[in-house]
Image (cartoon, rainbow, N blue to C red):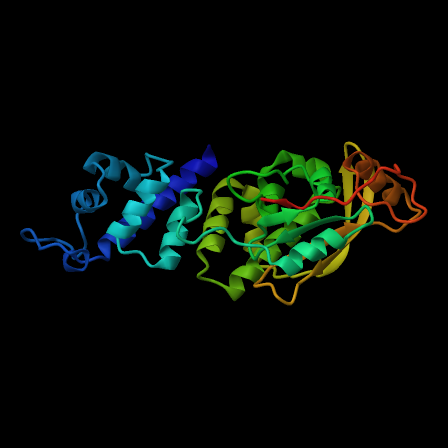
Length: 297
């Protein structure tokens, strides 16, 4: 509820800013009488977008928190938004711009994801840590990896889902790394609308994220170890590697695994058994195991 209200306020502020910067002539209107400002009036934007003036006023005031895709598209056209501004507007409405289409996972990344044959949890993430595809082991390890209208996001999971604090043994370290990764991404693409929307959302709803963000730490780890307290697999100490396919545009594959013969490796097999993942030679798992499916978002 708090997150929705924060997005509604930011949406209203964004609409006010764009309305104030658009001259009537740019919107195809003739100036109607003297104006105190150079921008459009609220009723003019409403008329161009085909919505009531009262509804548009509520949007600007943050009192209508979930406009439809068609309304956002009409407002984007009325305010003459460019592609980045459109993407930001739709992100604030918790939609993907229908003109942009879904971010696609390259075939090379899909093939690499399918090649992890041991009880390895692997997924594909983009620059803002949206999880775009994952194998069944990853879904069994991470509770937020479920298909939906929008991609699961690792940073949002860490800071807003209580399950993350139960899953990660050293949650404080995970939180610090997550914020530092996001800041590194923002440094490379400071005007990225998806990044800006995610950061604004987390600052509004998570005091823990706000504290970490103030530290201004910057990190981009490509390997390491994380400890989990999983309700099925038990205590796990997993190594992870981050791979970047040559054909990707900012996409990365993250793979979690354990040393064979360890308790953590056995714990992964407890997760793997009902998933029917491939069984390496000599491993203790059902003989009926098959190749895992790749789950798109």
